[in-house]
Length: 211
Ligand code: SF4
Image (cartoon, rainbow, N blue to C red; front, side, top):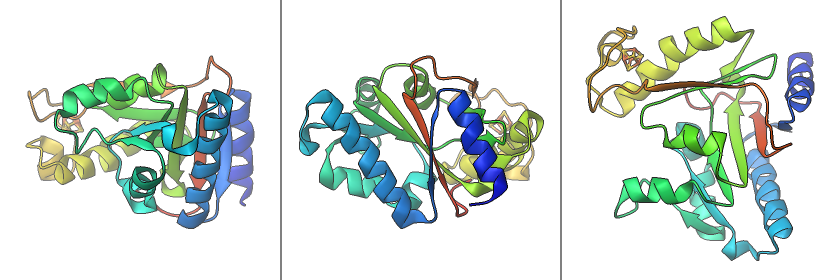
């Protein structure tokens, strides 16, 4: 583990945010599973009764977490549900919510931009536990770099992936758009502290994951 990551873990813990390290995707799956099972034990639930849901994330797919959770837990996938909007509302009361982040500063701040806001709603309040899986490519020196990363890398890549007709999808640069049904930057949230101690947990994976 690098000194940068050691510092980051210390900084997250000062913010009452759980911090875990995984060398690769396989280790990340083990860490996430153990965190989900721990929450199950706290709630007195057997594995297949633990309600797990997630926000849209390339990282979660790359690590294989959505597929793993669908097999092992009482999983709610809002993206394949018959009524995705209603499923996203239901996900706000899951036992465990999985997501990634758009950037993570060395100081331990988690930075995200969201279009609908369901992912950030869940991060802020609702699910009993939130697990944020982040590749080392998303670690930035400070907030300025984090916001620049979000606008120049995360948003253009996600807008393209989601086939959104936005300036960033076409040019790679933010045009500060406000286009109904297209804009993916409705809400910008910086998480600097977890008021409920260690409800939010960050799993840092020593690989490049997502955007
Ligand atoms: S505001 Fe619009 S153009 Fe700028 S990054 Fe967000 S979606 Fe792209």
